[in-house]
Image 1 (tube, rainbow, N blue to C red):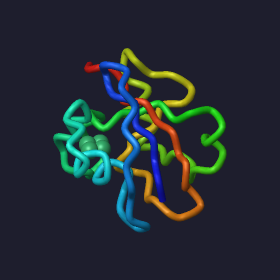
Image 2: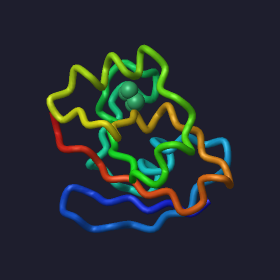
Image 3: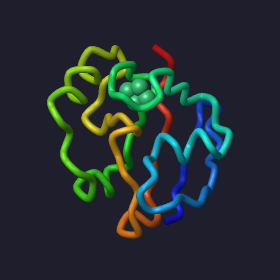
Image 4: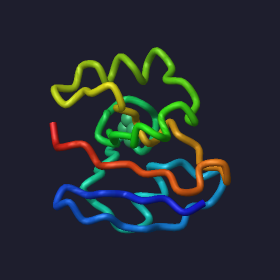
Length: 104
Ligand code: FES
């Protein structure tokens, strides 16, 4: 699926993801370092925080409790906050738009 990622400078990158890979892995692989993802995807760092475009929110799997807890501790928490390491890509997400959240 094709995904659109807006970085801290406001530039939007169009990147091609692989079904089954997580959104976090896909963004990192594309070289967008604003998304630090320091825990490597084990849902413990919250440095893979993104804002999901409203139109796409309902198409994603629900947030698990641990994901919500990490996110809600963030000063940048918003309704459309997600941890990108908890979002597996699929062809149903072709066109997904996200913005990398500001640094903690
Ligand atoms: Fe650490 Fe997602 S990479 S919580």
